[in-house]
Image (cartoon, rainbow, N blue to C red; front, top):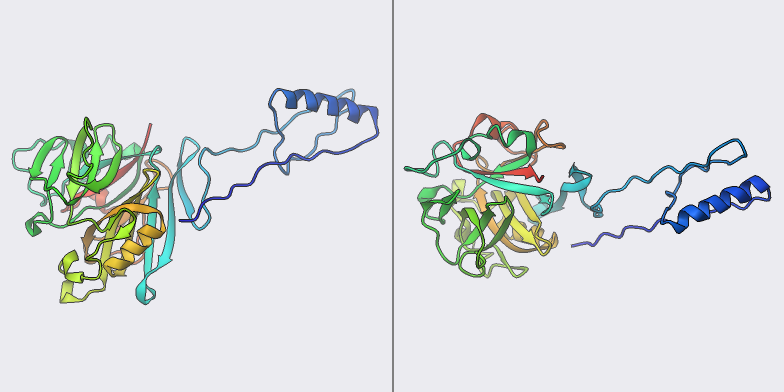
Amino acid sequence: MRNPAPGRDHPGSRRTRTAAALLAAGLALAVAACGGTSPPGAAAVKASPSTTTTTVPPTTTTTTEQPGWTPLATVNGALAVDTETVTGSGGHTITLFRFRAHETHFGLHVGSTDPPTGRAVVAADSGSSIGPDEAPALLAAFNGGFESATGAGGFELNGQVLLPLQPGLASLVIDTNGSARVGVWGQGVPAAGEQVASVRQNLAPLVVNGAPSPSIDTVSAWGATLGGGPVVARSALGEDAAGNLIYAAGMAALPVDLASALIGAGAVTAMELDINPEWVQLAWSATPGGPLTAGVPGQNRPATQYQSGWTRDFVTVLAAG
């Protein structure tokens, strides 16, 4: 993962020989002694006995942009969502979306037909469409995992176990405060005392400790594909050392393409999500609650699919606050 290399500001100075300029310089030094700085490239304001020296404050952001990544959304001045595109095997495109840990929260939804909910109580903000409380804070939404009939793992929704959770499986864990992480159930996840709200499991982990699964090249281990071909639409979700979640997807990908892209983006743990073109989809917004844009080039579903309702489970990404 490339580290950002932000530059430092070096305010310039201008020598003059006039008494008025010396007076202005003395005033500037007094301001500097109190911790003030001048922004790089700011226009100089000439001082005279009849004018007041002013300083234009710099524009700041609390999260530095990273070379190679394109910012998509900010929350309260901090970068919340950014994206990167990499090339997988065979020249196919893998698109990455990174959700910053302190600026985003997450919610798990059930679909209209899967997973089965039985007698569980499904709140409006956990159902088959984006609910009214989530809509104003919505930054993104993306697909969940395999259909429950495949036996790929368990499912817990707001403290209600819909499908039994299985140890050793990759799991997206969402806490009651909306924070989320990706880990291996029963191996450090959940942590002692963790207030877990929802869990979505799917297969064995795709990436563990920053390395691909030993089964990464056994394509059959990562789900049945339409037509039996290895290169199909695939998606995955990882977590980096800073706690950011990273979604990766491509409409023509191998499991190793997703693992490599996520590791390259800094993921230390990752899980495969759903595969095949009908299911792989992400939508994002530049502002909380703003219009949605389809995020995976070539995806079959429209950007508004999760707003109108969907048959399968999905995850929402919300502005923290």
